[in-house]
View 1 (spheres, rainbow, N blue to C red):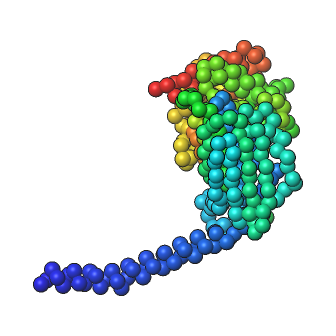
View 2 (view 1 turned 90 degrees about the vertical axis):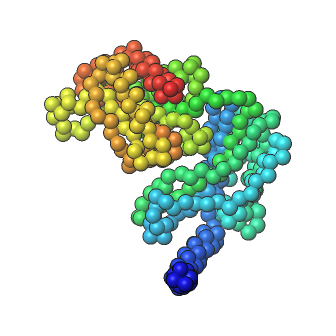
View 3 (view 1 turned 120 degrees about the vertical axis):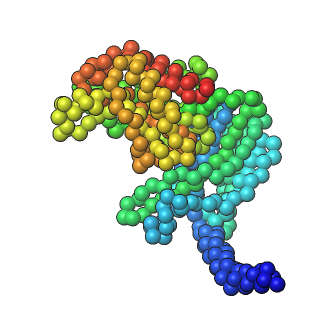
Length: 364
């Protein structure tokens, strides 16, 4: 009898307290979902992205929304959720996207189609009722997959932010290729000179090392995309877009360090040499590769080292969804480091050490 009374009392408590709370939460969730479903996002027709490596290509269809921080809530968690359906029939791919306003100047997609191994043609049509259709004609028989890929938020100023999600269309040849995809990112470029100490431009040194790293890794069988292969400007989030859209295995940014002008020479001497930055809060932190890389590079070019740096707020480290690192190869305001890196032989040594680090990281 006592046991029966306990059961009845338990049911009473559930009905009185727990069920109403659950109902309220469900009602709140439904209201939030309905609010998201009623939003009209922007589809930026002149901001499509395309990246390509051996046996794989990725097209990013950008859907974005701009609002204030108070409207978004937690800007780190806010996500644009495109409403779309897909149809794949042979070499024809159709993506119907609803609740979007097509923005930007009309684009004939020449930049996307140039040297494109996997897309023969692409067409964007504006339909009624905030609906757009993207038609893609592929080159031959490919494995096509379509998934949303979130981009890190960006500040527009005046407490306003842009949130973007790419509808990521990937094209893979029907061959078995399990080789790792690595994004090489030469820091700075164009009007962004980087360090300019000791008669050197960091942007040029970064590019020289990066090209050598790319060549080494490609010869070793890795699939490589480099964010710039000339003296051009690259936006911070544009640097990590290929990593996210291609679902890369590693993002590897290459820099050479500088220190503030008011730092005395004793401090320069203390902080000269090699370090690697990573993000401990990332979904897949790059600390393991950072540790291997710093050890290999510093021991090869005989530089001083100082501790790895955890930099979760650095844009290129917080916006890549794969393991990401930023290597500060040397300190350009140190006379010894700068003199050493003026010799291209040492750039090649850094590239060779980087290859060994990558091999040790992936081949365990």
